Image 1 (cartoon, helix red, strand yellow):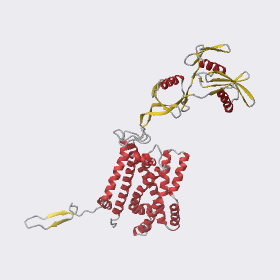
Image 2 (cartoon, rainbow, N blue to C red; image 1 turned 90 degrees about the vertical axis):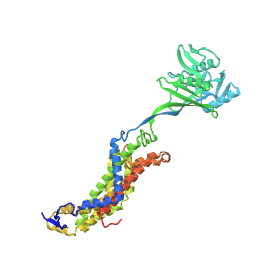
Image 3 (spheres, rainbow, N blue to C red; image 1 turned 90 degrees about the horizontal axis):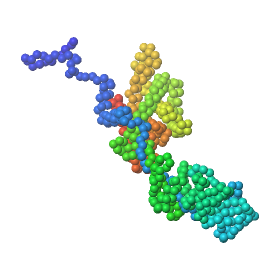
Image 4 (cartoon, rainbow, N blue to C red; image 1 turned 180 degrees about the vertical axis):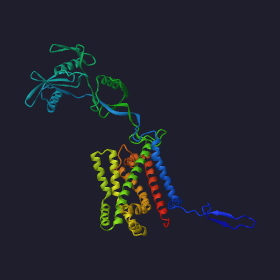
Length: 515
């Protein structure tokens, strides 16, 4: 091995150095030079740190999170709902015998006769006889046939059982208003007690009352026992009461009186398990919960995972197509170049945003599964993004294919595919890395925009875009900052990180570039 001798002062032995001594000048590889220039760029290092933080947050955070991305949380709320309306009847109600026609106009004529104290009236050439059976109780006959009963007291059928005939109801009303306790109809004995209950033997056939209890909706079934409790509470001027139904369900009822309509409104207060929607940040949920009662921090982690994966897959699809088409166009030239470039021009003319909106609406109409929809979204975005990469690769290859090393590969008989993919494409990689890095940020923005508009990632999957979709609700935007601001911050950090890294790589690969 050769050695170098250095002169030394008299009396000292000369020093010997080998060529591989640590003190010799170090020569860095091209990759090391690029890395050195990259890490000298402060913005690039900051961008890389931002990306590392977001990757750890999205992929590691989702693993260590104690919750799932679609896990919902519930809370017990006391709900108030309109249950029944109550009023005291003050007008005549008409019970028409089966098979008889006694409409509103006939009822109006009857009311005129009652107010005038007349014993008969004529309607459509038919004469009707009016019989006063007691206070606020009248019966109407056509000849000897009972046609209608007009009364302010109301005969109510029992909770289970059929309504008695009109003759029995008339006799019960007559006994009730006249204070009678026993009567007969067609040889059958009936009893009327002081509470207005009609009994046949020991069987209850119905009861009489002026209280009208009407259900707020068809799902509410009002029992006799509930009516009695309610009437008792109203009589005592109570503002609320507690009632236990037959199945053991206990509920509180709030009574309010409306003087304008002279009626009572009864609202049911029930404890119900509901989604823990928009709960504020706490030790259990560091960023609160969303409209579906899901942990926002966990949704952000899984949303970052989805957004980043979509970005990389879309850029990967665009990169593969762009390198393939651009490499063929740049190397072969002539008609191949013209054909591929015309295809690129056609793709540049396609309005990508309207096309994506139309396809998203079509997938909504077909109710595509959310996972399949996400795959379609990645394929569509990747297929629409390759032309810019193809032009970049073509331009680089056009300048490289005329250089001496390509002439040497041709002289050595290397196959065409090896010339393109082993000698030309590797020389385009630096510019391709920069372009793809910059494209990642714009792809994530595009996905977030589509998801924000409801055309991208669908529930139950989370992405930063569909998390921010709640901003469509002005109330949520102004009152629940923890729903949309964290997702916006994550999106901002990630896109800025990719842009900083892309700028740093561009400067590192091209040392002549001045910042």
